[in-house]
Length: 451
Image (cartoon, rainbow, N blue to C red; front, side, top):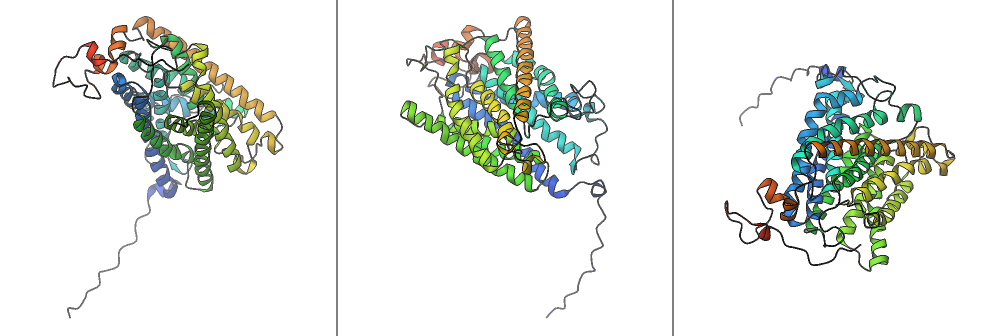
């Protein structure tokens, strides 16, 4: 038997310079994963929205989400992060530009127990999906070139300031007002919903609104997108704990629970109202519950999460029909789900907040009185009004300078072919480079829209 020679013992590993700076490897690993999960939500949203539109504009819908990733990233790295999370520069309204271009933030810079560069990237993924959410309100009729201008301007003028108010050092909503928002009901859900409503009014309704059927063309795609959104939402909410800890675990469970009761609440309404629980209703209900729990997931108990999700599923299932009565064309129900769901979740913090989660503030049902409810309401009104007014102004300016609404012929033919020179599906005549007429590219709907 050949003798075995033992290798010399390994030298002791050198201490990491990052460890000396207070970076926790477990927290960092979790936030790396959470960041990837949140980024995945935007492609998930693209599929969710893409399945909900008609065949002639599927690719355009996907592109509006994907291009948001690139546009918002450039703006965030150049100035967005600095203005949102830099030290307060003007009365709780905006940060300074000391870290513009991420200047001074090297690998040894620390935010809590994680690298600051990772924290900045995590927050970037929030900004990306918020901008992409707005696209659902103007599906089928927005000029792609105008969207390319709108997204970076909107990110700087709406998302960045509101983020500073809620989460930035010295922000007035968290500091002066004392309103709570754990993972983005105000900066994400309410800004996207209010901004979506503003753009609906700027662009006007789609051709055939309330006359032609505009049903989702691919419900399996919608369900796949909803599943990816739900999966990514765990990074969105639990990642906001910024650590692999007990709070992250509680938030993770609250997120799951609210998505489930939101789904069940929406289906219950559909069954009673229409006689049929639908796959679109299941996907929409889950998203509504997840939207509502986003601001409240780090403030309420499991029971509170169940109730908040259920409330959102029930109320949002009715809210999506308001567009027919009030005559605004929110194509894919950004207002009915994200604005309404975000309001529900943000306001109900004032009812269900528990000190074991918040570390102090309590809601009405736990002896906190009406004070927190009032603070949450003020935050909702302020953020909603600001987002709506600024977005309306930006939308009107772009419409006057460039034209925001697609040409009628392009809208009728479909934006996939007229803007991107592609189609998502072979309609029987589409060859390599073969010309396609408007009559071939679009199939007029024969069913009446359900109002």
